[in-house]
Length: 86
Image (cartoon, rainbow, N blue to C red; front, side, top):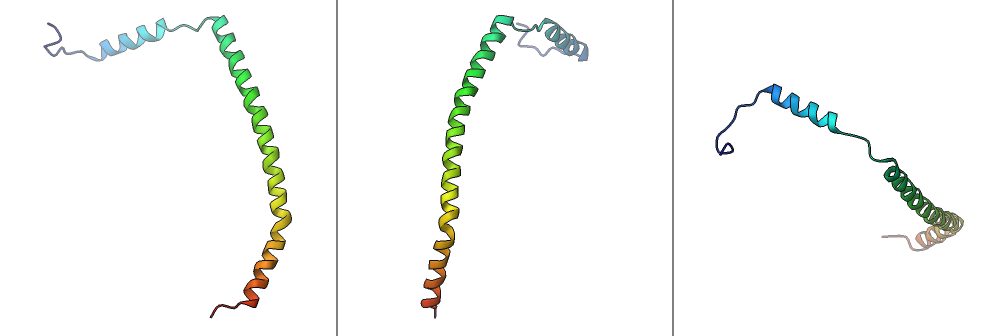
């Protein structure tokens, strides 16, 4: 029934709680760290390969855009000069 009544706890209770929690933390086992590291490395390699191919495609598309952009601008300028707005 202690949960029905408010118990006053001072800063000493909080300090003891944090000290107990921090002292009970330990590092994960080395095999678990190794497995997680290998999985993260394989995920990174697969995403890097996809990233590299998509970047190559983007560079080719950008080069094509820069190749044809002057032609498109010339045609737009000719159209606007032939059909002036009122």
